[in-house]
Image 1 (tube, rainbow, N blue to C red):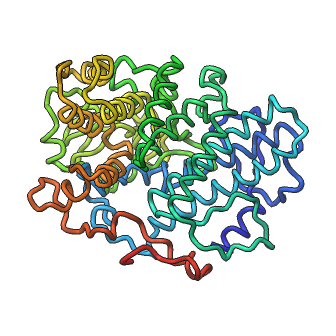
Image 2: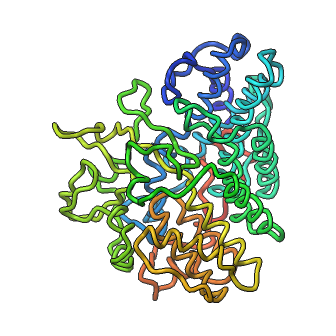
Image 3: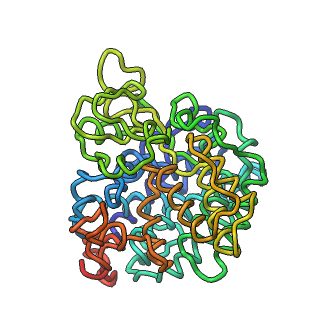
Length: 479
């Protein structure tokens, strides 16, 4: 890690005019941070650079579309489905490097913003974005790797980076601090002009923090989940899209249901396009498990939006393979009729968080905290079911059955959006069944995967290249 940090952060600022589209970014420059952050253009360019990891390959350019291969959703993603990733594998290395790159960029920005004379009204919301991104990146790190080194200061060649791993609890404390700071500084989504949609918002910070508390699952966390999601709901900044299909249409990106998306752009010289098409349709590397599809209620309209079976056409893609393809963010394959882009250069954003998840998280917290679910909470879940073409849950449903219903809704409402692995992990931690062991390890499960070894595969390996640079970094168990 030391060489990576020392060489990267000196180059972390970028050339880009603030009048350019937010989606565009320029390559890392050779300027040092001392010569930047003096104008509004430079400040905007610097915070834009902190979003860059979202567009990188092991994150949302295509990596997140493959995470479901660790679950019952998909297979054929090679190292993911086979659990063959090692400390030297590009999957763990790529995630680690992308996330720390974003953290370093945020650290520099927060430091410089604290010394800026460009005015609070301009600097504070941008600083909120930096806190949000740092908390967001650390949240990914702790879920993938467990405890990691916490670095919250700008790094230069003289900085001591022979740092051990902090505990997972310490990382969570840092995430909470960052996201609470972001909530206090960020504007609501409605305060951004359309040209700036895609930036972090107060609602996005509240949603990620609620998600974190739900995943951590400590005593008292559910009350915080309930409070945060209620704030998002009562803000009236978001609503469900009228149809499920419309959520994943190019024309509706950053729409009414969207809380946070990784912004993609076709045709940029800076490789801002999504590569999901290439990995799904060209390489057939993330095929949907047929039993996952077959167990899906055939009356559920979400199934045919989310999965492109052989012979079907979704958006501008016809599936001519023998495999079932995830299709929510599949758009723009090569050919004269293509309307969107090349197989490795699609403009389709990656949906990271949306309002449906907020309703489901809120329902889960309320259900676990109460003796029986209220009619209002049940109705929020029924809103998703009605949109999917399914019948309502009964207002007299029991707490236990409502828990199962919420889990079923999460499984299909959010399929292939990068949530399923983390849901299985937290179900496992809750100790009430339905987690990794029951779904993937139990030989009686229709999704049994003999490659899964527990507790080893609860976490990814720390990249060996980082341990070689910083020998006091200890490896995760069994790698």
